[in-house]
Amino acid sequence: MLPNPDGEAERNNLLSHIIIARTNTYPTPLACLCFFIKATIPSHTNSTPKTSISTTYTMAGRPEPLRLGSVAPNFKADTTTGPIDFHDFIGDNWVVLFSHPEDYTPVCTTELGAFAKLEPEFAKRGVKLIGLSANTIDSHEGWIKDINEISQANLAFPIIGDKERKVALAYDMIDHQDATNVDSKGVAFTIRSVFIIDPKKTIRTIFAYPASTGRNAAEVLRVIDSLQTGDKHKITTPINWVPGDDVIVHPTVKTEDAQKIYPNLRIVKPYLRFTPLPKEQTSANV
Image (cartoon, rainbow, N blue to C red; front, top):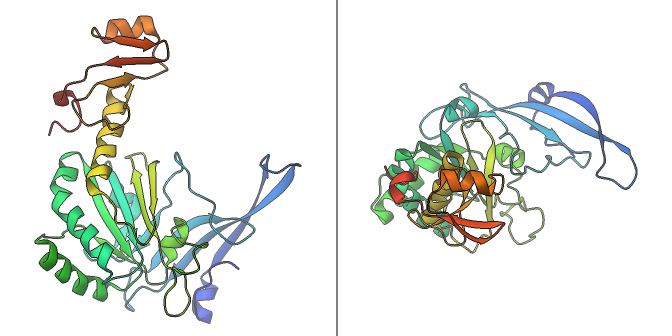
């Protein structure tokens, strides 16, 4: 079944447009029936803005899976710092969107505190942080007080109020497989997802963590450094890379060109070519 807001008035606001698209995913050519949904759902108060989400659903009623290279679905929502249009919020910045199953949960409390402490480093790299939890804004505000007290932090980035899990559904953050990851009503919790989105609104990285395992904020920052440095210098980063380590010349760069661009090129194999890249030339030099 498609997500359906409660109440007749809300149902009347649900606009559906049927798009027929052919796909070669199946063994035989079939028409893949998709629904483009633009839903207007009440927020935690009776005031505007209302949470508005545009996304595409499969015939099974679940959102199409987001992949690396997908455009990040846009939405309007209330947050702890005020209402946002997500694409406007991104602007010309990079964004890290990360979700939490519920407020006042122990692992998430430690995670948000860690991200709050690292936020200045993300900001230096032109990265905005935004969290999401399946509770109301009022609940978030009380939770933030605990987070700041426990972590000795000052959490200033917005947290989306997604009590109805509309944004979580649009981003496929709902755990459909783990029958134990549900609330008291049996509704599936939002899993610990992380999306790194670039200024073109393109999803560049996706992480998904189980409920029992806390995320590594420093690793998210390291991936940001890798992506931004790679975009600038036409390089890729090897295992366990940190800014200042040698990097790998991108496979699309021919060796004869690489030798001109990178004077200290070290060829291990024709497909594996290293070059030094000082930390000062990476995005970590901020």
